[in-house]
Length: 186
Image 1 (cartoon, helix red, strand yellow):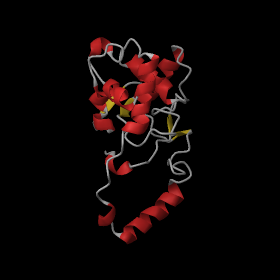
Image 2 (cartoon, one colour):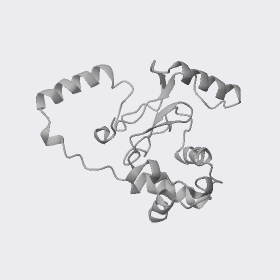
Image 3 (cartoon, one colour):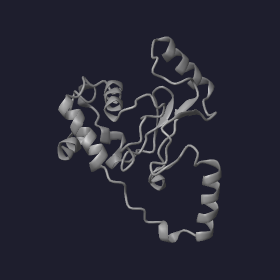
Image 4 (cartoon, one colour):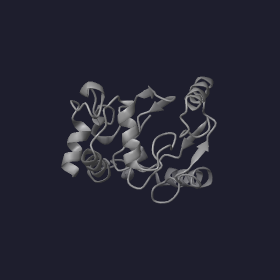
């Protein structure tokens, strides 16, 4: 299943995945990481890194609008103009994303200043750990973090007016997992 899922993830000639088979998941999620670009979908969104970060971290996507990984993959296929993956392709793709996309090994841990690590940990525990909690570093909730701009609010309101009732209120975003954050810049 993981091997077949890798094929779905990387093969761009699949019309069920994207319009006329022009894109694959790996087009933006390079080796399961990210392309470091911001795309305009339901607002400006940076490509999320997936490698080592999707197992049990739902809800998924920036808005937290999909509770399950398969649901989120189906939404992504629709957004990419695909005809829809088969149930087998969806299951295989999920297996690959959960079990086949391993996070890169962090080359930096021995290079960090222990004093700065302690200071950073104190800041994290004071300011961040209530939402970025547990071994997944996410609480699975959506929060208004005060970053929505005017254009984004208008776009979100238009989507809601067109019947997209799965969106959270404007300005709310999913708490992303901070697993392996070191390789997810900017």
